Length: 178
Image 1 (spheres, rainbow, N blue to C red):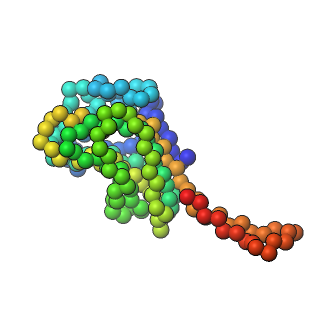
Image 2: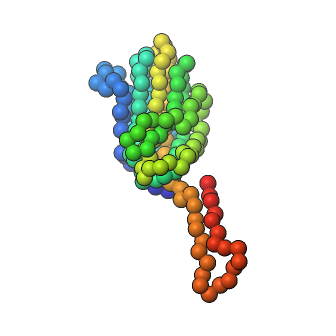
């Protein structure tokens, strides 16, 4: 595990990198939501952290996670998605490259655990973000809530070299792990 945060003590270093900051309505926020209860504790990240808060129509909301050093990584988190014809994506990129969709979410109306892995990349760093695409003309969507975030990196191959004092006619071995 490279990173874990349940967001009870702090915001975990995540950053609201929404395309239209400065709006009178909030975008992503860290805190104690008044609309739903987090799965554990009191705090999480959400697109509508306050109970009477509504999301602006046709808005792109991004919550960016700090980069990790890895060629292949897994993201795990608990999420609650309350939307009406909107889109929610987990995205990743390598070393300042373009963002790629790793998964798309639909409404669950309950806290659910998710886990996604990237493919092995020709890069030394990977960065994840949550992208909520508010594309419908309604103000009933409370948006996306994120808690218990964990990032893991993988070593994708292990080379076993034979020891000088052993004889094995079938080695050395290469073992590939997911």
